[in-house]
Length: 311
Image (cartoon, one colour):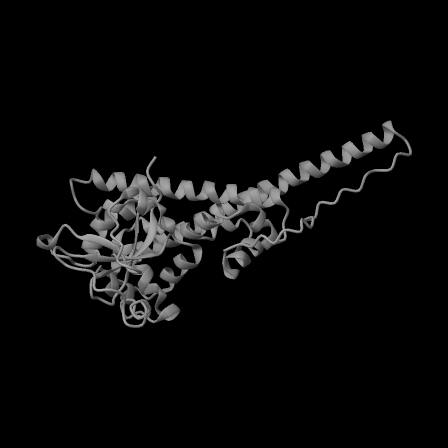
């Protein structure tokens, strides 16, 4: 089974502009880094090092162990790592392709699509909505595409959102139905028990979260916890990176952070894992289509969008 793509942040040696991309292996990271950083073929093969300390990343197993959003530097042929930036490595992080924080978030998301359109599948509902709300002309200029194709792209983004909402409603109806069956079964069971053993008092079951005395803490952000606790079917709202974080989180710590019992937390993690697997399978399918598309490096925009609408 192919490794799951994870977000990486990469820049040129000596450069300050950072690019975000998704890669499932070191080979793919090198290929995408060469493209997004416009490194000339004559200067390949490139060397990938950690931006933090210049450690050379030349082993696939080591790459897989690195967390999402690890910062890398791509060194062209005969290029040397020049050390961290004077401010301890934070200067280049604050200058991400001249994008100013959340106000220009759509540009960062647009670059992800420019790098690989299948990143649509991995985005959160919030990210999808941000791209839908961008004026056609601005997004067309950023992606160097015609406004007609951008309109088709935004229609596809809206269809992905609509499909997730339909799935959410279906899951909610199923949960209500199963809960109703469970409640009905519980009532019938209690009635039968009371008739069999008259006068016997029913035990009071405490379904709340018991105090275990542990101090397990979660590494999830407050925003992510709020989404998990407040949104119906939260796995459909999150991007793939957040889904992976939830799946890898300690179940006991997650339950404590959400004030849930362990079973409910486990069910959430299973739902997130299933959603993540489904999205990654869709991405792999699209990559397979691309690789068989007449040897072209990328699937043409029109063909990709048409294939999405047919699904």
